[in-house]
Length: 112
Image (cartoon, rainbow, N blue to C red):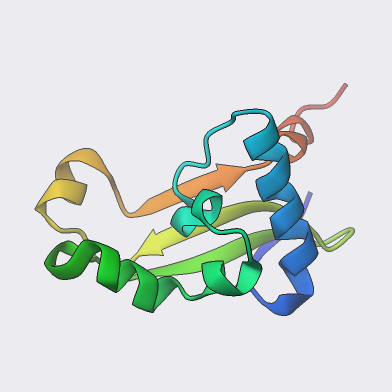
């Protein structure tokens, strides 16, 4: 399986929001995803930088958000937040990235 990372665009809106809905319906965790679980529209979610700066103020750490897209069928199989640097808290309890993989993508790594 080939997966590439791309910045979120409107092209993937339907897929991302469907992933959100499925995980909320199943009471599953998102492992951050830049707060995807907290927003009902894709456009609200896409406003990462301003939204997170306001929420975390002086403890905010810039991050780049990417979609993991499977090359074979252009399907979103994951989301990754890649932090540009770490503050003291994230150095101890977090890390440089948060990731989220769909169940389908996880199981596709294992042959039947």
